[in-house]
Amino acid sequence: MINVYEPHEWKHGTVVAGVPWKNPVGTASGTFQLAAVRDYYDVSQMGAISTKGVSPIPWEGNPSPRCAESPAANVNAVGLQNPGVDHYLVDDLPKLKAMGATVITNVAGHSDDDYAQVVTKLASHASDMLEINVSCPNVSHGGMSVGTDPVALYKLIAHLRTLTDKPMIVKLSPNVTDIVSVAKAAVDGGADALSMINTLVGMRFDTRTGKPIIANRTGGVSGPALLPIALGFVWRVRQALPDIPIIGIGGVDSGLKALEFLYAGANAVEVGSAALFDPIAPLRIARELDDLLDTRPQLANLLAEGKTWK
Ligand SMILES: Cc1cc2nc3c(=O)[nH]c(=O)nc-3n(C[C@H](O)[C@H](O)[C@H](O)COP(=O)(O)O)c2cc1C
Image (tube, rainbow, N blue to C red):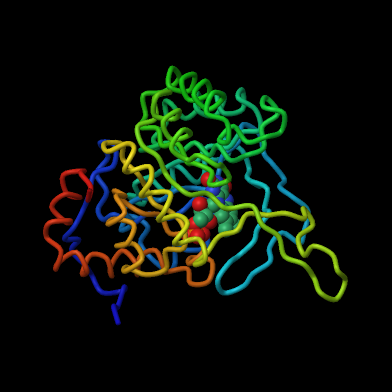
């Protein structure tokens, strides 16, 4: 059993879209809150911290109940609640940077203009990377998420590309029939990296009332059940796009599962729901992976150079 409170020298760092990460493990957006974890671990020790999605103005999110939990699959419809980009720029971002974290700012929008406003404001601030969450319902696209339509996605990312020089990760939705065409559209539009996957659409029912548990009815499924699905997505995109950096997300709750993503062709992983059950999980997983890579020098050397297993 690893003691994450002991000092540790990272042995196996990586580089994602030109940005050095101390180790290939980050936190996944929406499952990390600085106030909740700062007393548990040193956030500068993570490969990167992906923040909650940031929108142009404060969003209240969805009505409660917002979550239906189970060990294998969590369903949530938080609805991208956040205090808005202006608050983020004077609160979370400076605090995270002062603590030495490598910061990925996750960007949310309900229209193409929302995304453009946030990316413009972030362009001159200290985030190390941007992660564009294209799974949000989008009024510019009839309420559908822009991440399900390659043509709309290409247009959005090409426009955002003109607004920032920061490394831009596009976070893909799994709620599509052809992930490769969506991934290619994001890369053609100017994405420097891809992260995948966001949550799958799902539901749970209350067997006493016969009604959906979540007020929003449907929500996003996350947690261990996502692992094989997310690995399949990463692998298919890696086969089609051999050079684009990929961050694998979905069901990572151990160093071994993180390792599976690296063998599927990911450059790094982000840990989501595991942190909702165990706040220190992201750091524990990073430490487990650091030891697992000791005995896999070929993979470790590729990662150190920003390359991937093929
Ligand atoms: C409560 C909750 C909130 C989330 N909020 C965001 C968000 O704001 N932006 C985003 O891109 N993804 C968000 N996600 C998706 C996660 O970052 C991740 O892609 C997904 O949960 C799958 O990973 P996991 O199985 O490790 O949880 C959220 C997930 C959960 C469970």
